[in-house]
Length: 171
Image (cartoon, rainbow, N blue to C red):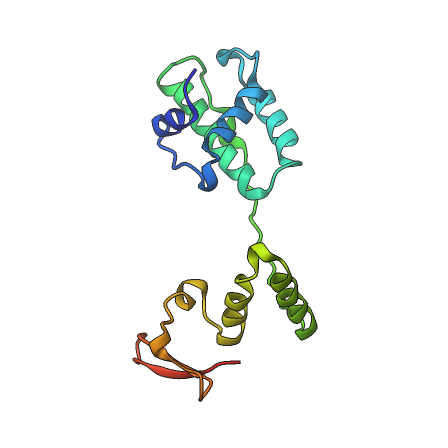
């Protein structure tokens, strides 16, 4: 039995984010459990597609599909235990774009109040406000230095970029 990471490396797959590399191989192992490699055909592939497609996101489905395709291709070309790769017929699912939901002023205020009330994440409220009022991305916001902040004028400098420094009003 191959470890998930080793199996993915042998199949030239990039491990998915979040340390879930073994998860995809384990899911496929559970699905194909008890099936001899030479017995895997279009019926098993279609059954996997129907069963997994209804319970996982499109992104996870597509990654599992790629793992299955490569496993079966390995079985076909290197091990010579199957004649055709039935997973090649499985189409990718379309991955939808995440919907951006902009909160109302009241919802944003409630969010910040909720963060401030929770001791473990209290300091995150300031960061959330900085992101919202400055329009900066998290990586950009973490680069702001005190020497760039002018509390009397309610501004801070936004260093760098193509045009150099610019003043930016704060909230």
